[in-house]
Length: 93
Image 1: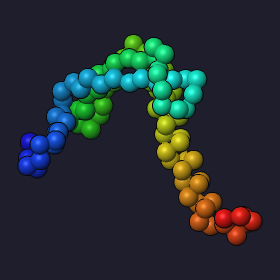
Image 2: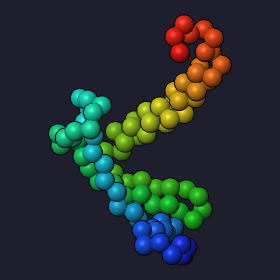
Image 3: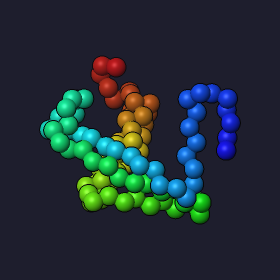
Image 4: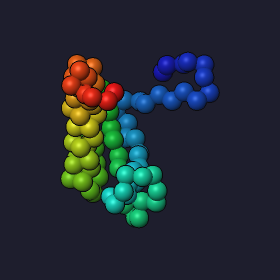
């Protein structure tokens, strides 16, 4: 195990289940009460590089994962590119 000497250090061990939880509000993007849209799932990071997720609502979680992947990769790269290379097209910066 990695010993950093810090009290708040946490090491995720391979080949062991990690219990996680989630909550979201589908009606707004603001941080507020989730209206019973919550759940738990188990994740396992395997030593061969694969992962296992187990959840009764896995299609909903898979959709959420694809949306987040799009937001953090495609959309954010487009924003950086447009701000850096297309700024001469903007009238107001």
